[in-house]
Length: 98
Length: 438
Image 1 (cartoon, rainbow over the protein chains, first blue to last red):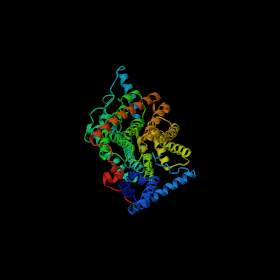
Image 2: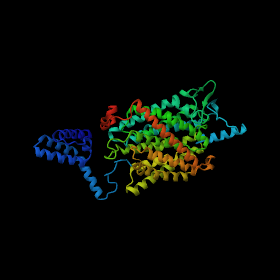
Image 3: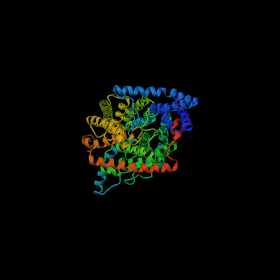
Image 4: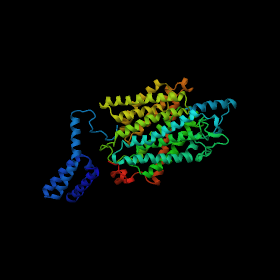
């Protein structure tokens, strides 16, 4: 799944949430950050369950599938950091290359 | 640099002949072909090719490997575009304004369009520069062209992934003419005010590296950060590309530094040795610094460290011993590691590929240490840290102000940044409608 495809699905969820709940989200950040994506998914699914909104739930499922590698990488980083692994990629390339 | 030694010698000679009156240095001249050294000419043509190799494809690979996948082709296109634009500017105006006698601030117009580069077969004469009288002026002009090209190409590392392509080309043309050319004249033309002052810059510590580093920092501030900078990881496309680029830079730097002796002589040999020793020391000191701080030695650290060592030895290569070169390289490796990490965080600028951290800091360290370690027995001149600091300060100040003016002008002409959509999509597709294969 390319970054552009992830952004496209995140954009669909953004529009749906804006229309159905009034909630405004950050599309690009949703497609890049695992923690933010998980929180948006939690909110979307809670609303979908409350309103019996199958369409919203389906979009949330698609985003979850698209974000799976990002979420897995984030979890790996957290594990490495907890273990004190040298050069854990948590902050690697954020704000600088070196 | 040999230019300076020549200027000092020529000035002393003429001053003595004229009873102490100030004398203009001689300008380009037409001489008999028999006065040309075939060995020097052959070496300088080789050195020119080596320096061009540093840009095409050295810098292109070095930088393209560090940007995100969606901006690799744009970065490479920018390097080629800059090489072409700066070459034509150099041909039309730049060489003459930089390397012919004029005022202490700027050269004359006698070589606009490479006019007067005569090679007359029947008469057996050809044109030479007063700065390098044993090689054809055409070779000297090409050698200096390759310096003008790489200096402008270095700056783009500070603003990759967000600048309009038209703006890149306009910036390169104007920056080369307004910023690089006057500084080259100040330092390398014997009548330039910093050359007269006694500033030492063998191959471009201040003219190329401090200048490019400061310009890069100004560009980073004026353009602003890339979207998502500091919030999300910007994964480099291929550090293998970067390593290949760094290798080409290391090898090409022998042309850059040893070529700056302007002759195939002992000083060129010394510069070559110093260049290699400093690169090695820089690579290892950066690696050790990173190993100590981050507990892992990285390939990017090794590549960055060797470049730091090369940058720092550039102003010193023909003035210092190999032992001093090792020390300069080692100090530069650590200083540039600090410049590209801790100092970068303090400056809060998205200098994307650390042009200031590596070239600005490396050039500053090398220029100042040239004042400390310059050995009179090697070159006939001794250094002064105060003079070196003055020269670096003057170059940095002029570069900062003039670069800001050039950016202001380019913003008026074509605008500086791509649209948010283009930046998100990537400049390869958004600007060039091309995609990296695979």
